[in-house]
Image 1: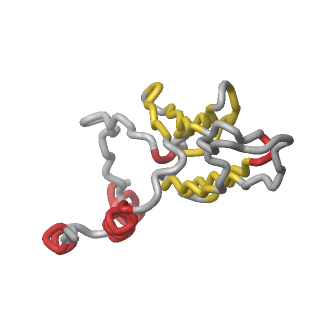
Image 2: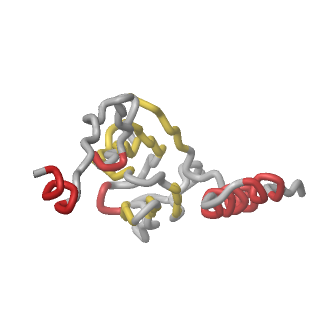
Amino acid sequence: MNRMDFTPYRRSTVGFDRLFDLLEKQHRNNGGDNYPPFNIERRGDDEYRITLAVAGFRAQDIDITAQQNLLVVQGKKRDELPEGEMLHVGIANRGFERRFELADYVRVENADMADGLLLIDLVREVPDAMRPKKIAIGGQKTLEVVKDEDEQSDAA
């Protein structure tokens, strides 16, 4: 198994521990289950869509939980038995859990199901205080020298 070593980067950066831990965790867990298949799409500068193929699941079988920096999608297996005798079972009816790590300020805007696909729209809303600002060079007013009261009384 290949191990990702971020030691050289950890030595020269400050405050990125969470990012490196996240990358190492994702690398360790990468060999897991790939069910259900999914796409992640960038729809704009601050808009994303996650599409999961959830054929056979109804909206009430799926739970979507958004926490800070984490989106968890769970599908619950139904215990319904088909009316007839099943000769072949090729459509998976097993439960699943998919976790998506979200960047700061990313929130779920909408979730919908259509044609066997679960669509989750995400948007990144960076607070105004965190947005880049243009700084004017030499934009400060000129400083005035404040005279002491003693200097003012001597001049009079």
